[in-house]
Structures are given as structure tokens and as C-alpha cells.
Image 1 (cartoon, rainbow, N blue to C red):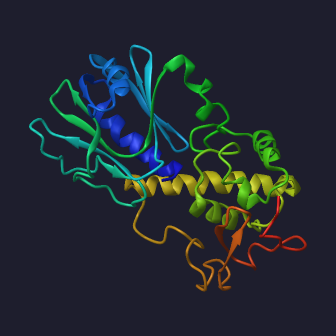
Image 2 (image 1 turned 120 degrees about the vertical axis):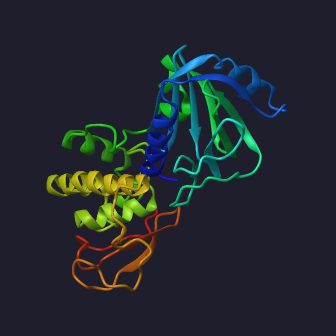
Length: 287
């Protein structure tokens, strides 16, 4: 699950839940510590639901926050009073491009709102309960980079962030959550294609013009993805190069190619004509 998906989920949940009081929180009986921490939120209103990268964050009025990260498959679902699922686009399943309105296994957390509805979290995400003022001091969040969809980033910000991955290719740098939060492999490929940057280019070697193109492309591609997951974007071709090896590039008609990049072996789709390499292409870098 990527940043645009989680942001769309946060928007849907916020529309449905914001301002309501959570009257009751139930978790499996074998999670005794979670029972203590989560049930402390019962009786308090939801101040805000938002995202940062792939993190979904709930802020409560009494200074406690829930944080959820999609390590494994998960779903958030909203039930009417009485336990029937709302047949509206309010639930989200990690990794899917469509919303779902049916149970996804054993509930992890079941929260009852003041109007009788229930919010059910199923699956196995990473779930944290923290004091809101200490949120960004937690080890999981302390080093995370800015979210291009949420933060106003200048050219200096981009240049500084890319220096954190100075020894890696730009293909690896964009997936580094310390550099930018929420960019997944599909959007990495789309951003690089829209910016005309070869994925093997060293992050530290990008010039000012390339960094500017990269910043503009990131904003455009991630915003398009976010609108797609919200359902605002018209149906059509979402990705220009991702998962389209051998197909013609929509810009120049050259066959799209694919390679593994870096030690982590992520596949990278790109157009060899629109994204010409400056010198030798080293997708299989050893840094």
C-alpha cells in the first residue's frame, strides 16, 4: 500500500468519523496490553484522521493517537448500527485498487461510535498507540522523510533530501522512506518517466533542472494517483510505463524496458529513449 492509497483512506475515514466520539473499543482478549491502551480512548472524540506517507494517523481530543502501517494485508470497514456493512466506498483493503465492503477475517480492533456505527480494523498491520505530543519521536517515525502530497517542498528541500542517498541511484533514493515518504515502486517509475530521468542516474549527480523536473513530476503523479484512489479521476490509463514492458511508450513509441535495480531487486520500468542515461547505466549498483 502506498502513500496516495493511505491518503485516500484517511480522507474517507475522516469524512465518516471526524467529530464523533468513540464510545467503546474492543480488541481480542489475548491482547491485554492493547486492551488497556486502546480502551483509554473510549469516551473521547476524534479530532483528526490524516496520513503521512504510508502511516494512517488518528488524533483524539485527549492527546492520544493511533498509528497504523500496512505491513500486511488489512482493511478498514464501517458498519451501520446493528452490524450490517455500509455499501458505500468507506472501506479499504491494502494492495487493492478498489474499495471493499465485506469482512476480511478476524477483527483486530472494533470501535463503536456515538451514533451506533462501528469501525472495524482487520488484518495484521503495525498498530501503535502513542501520546500525540511524542508522536514524531517514536523510532518508526523519527527518521521518516516529508510527504510530497502533504508538505510544501522547495528545490532546496529536494536537494537536501536526495543527499541522504548520495551513493545510490535515483530509482533507489525515491523508495527510501527517509528521503520521501509514501512513494511506492509504481509511482517511482512514473515519476522518473514524467521527469525524463534515467533510473540509474546517481541521486547526487542530478542537476538543478532535473531536480526541478523531479519535484514537479512527483507532485503530479502522486496527486493523480490520490484522485484515482478517491474515485475522482476519470477511468483510463493510470500508469505510462509501470508493468508495461514491451509496450510502446505513450510519449515516443519506443518499447518500454524493465530491469532490476539495486541490491533490493525492485523492478524498474522505463523508456530508454525518453529517459536517456548520462554515461553508463548501472541499474545493478553495489552501493
